[in-house]
View 1: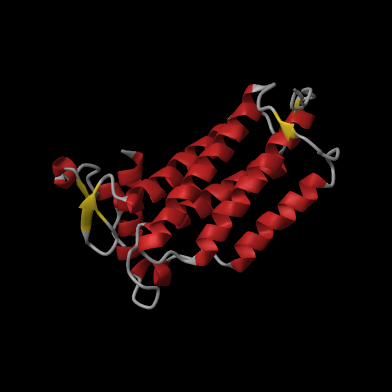
View 2: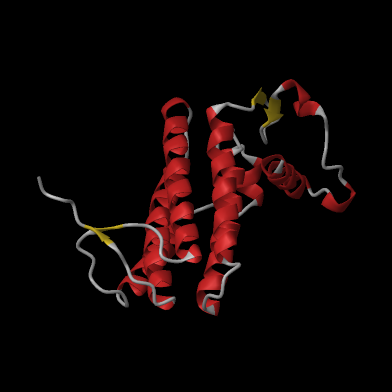
Length: 208
């Protein structure tokens, strides 16, 4: 339901229609299809729907992290990420070329600087953390686990996006953004582990 609403919202924002007077249900999807921003209808299990649907799920997990007591700077940055994920969803829901895309013309797209901003945040956080030489076993605190769930969902979104890219053109910057975001969410999980004074359990393989 939320995926459908987000797509409807993107459509209405692009078309300049007041969403407060727009019905949530259309009944058009009762046949198992959904509409892309271009107007084309596809099956709800189409890889494009899986891609932006998983980005929508990722957005929800990021929002869950904000429900906990975290520093204001991180909270605000997570809101920024959530806004960016809405744009990513809109771009993935648009199967038209950039030069004729209504969403590309109306919404500020994901660009190289967006990815660079994530990299800067990763470096900033990583400089404050102890060096890591092993894999980390997720857990220790609920918010840390939510950060890992967001990371895993981000990786799943990445798999769907790259699969979509095999059959239809996906802006490479979106693939780069999703890849970098998963790195950010991992480093965020380590930051939250430190902030909540939770012991970080490293995975040390047992030798035979």
